[in-house]
Length: 120
Image (cartoon, rainbow, N blue to C red; front, side, top):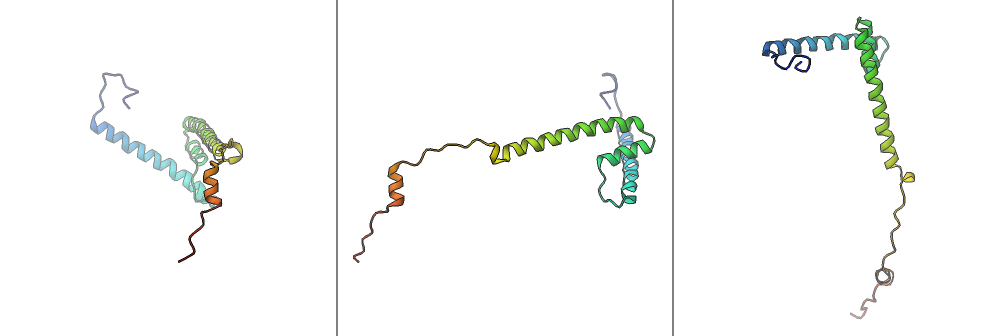
């Protein structure tokens, strides 16, 4: 709220609380509309497209367009994250680390253990 007002403006505690109540009511209103749509379509999950549809259905076309653009950008970012993760988790895309074989002394100890004293 402060970002839209001039620097010298102040917002009372009551004003902040009232705005919070309005925002909560607005979110409930839009979510309820989206939820009703999902219920009619026998779906349990409300997604971003449902929210955009609800905004438009309720007459908030400007918000629906803005949220739709945001949703598109958000989904692009999520796809890029997934692709980036897959690229680094996929062993075929990783370069092999060439490790030198262990020194011969260690090999001989492992492959040819010293004889044990069997006289006992």
